[in-house]
Image 1 (cartoon, helix red, strand yellow):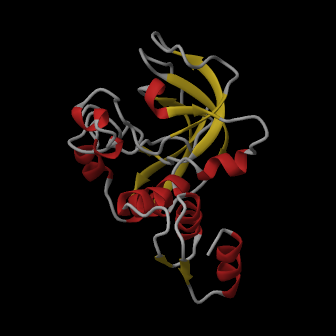
Image 2 (cartoon, rainbow, N blue to C red):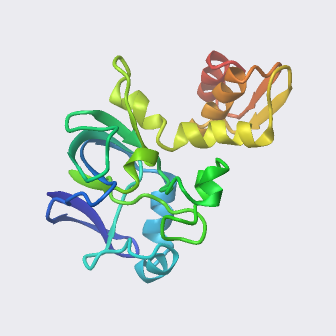
Length: 220
C-alpha cells in the first residue's frame, strides 16, 4: 500500500508498505478520504520523530511517522473480539485513541485515556495511507449513517468533536449567551454546537465576511 510517511522534520515521502493486519480488538480500514489538520503541520515541522516516539510509544515506525488522524473509509478486516463491525462497513474513527476501560475513560474523559499506551491521551496516526489500523475499535470507531457524505462525516473525526467539545466543557446550555472568537472550521463547529445545545444568544466573532455569513447560517 501507499502511505504518507514523515522521514524527518519538514519532509514526507510516499512509501510502499505492507497492508497492516488487525490484532485483537483492532480493525483495518481501507481509506476513501482523509484530510490535513493543523496538528499534522505541527508534527511535520516542529516535533522530531524521536520526540514523538517518547510522547507516543510505539507510534513511530522504522520508516518514520505515518501521518494523518482524520479519515473515512470502509472496514477491510477485523480482529478477534470485534463484534460491532464487519468488512464493508463505512466508518470513521476518533482522532484520539481510547481504551474504554481505564478510570478516565469510564468517567467519559476519553481524551485523557491512560490505557492506550500514553500517560494521558494518544493521537491516532496513519490514516493518510491506503489502509490503516485502529486499536480498541469497539470504542474508537463509529459507522457512518446512510445519506451522510464522506466529506460531512470527515468533520466528525476531529474538527466537529473539538468544537462541540469546547462548548460541552464550558457547560454552555439552554438559554446561555456565548461568544465564539474566530469562525474558521473549528469555530463554526463550536457555533453549531452552541446552537444545538440550546444556547440563547450565540455571537460569532471574525473579520472575514464569508466566515460571518456561514456563522449566521449555523445559528450565530
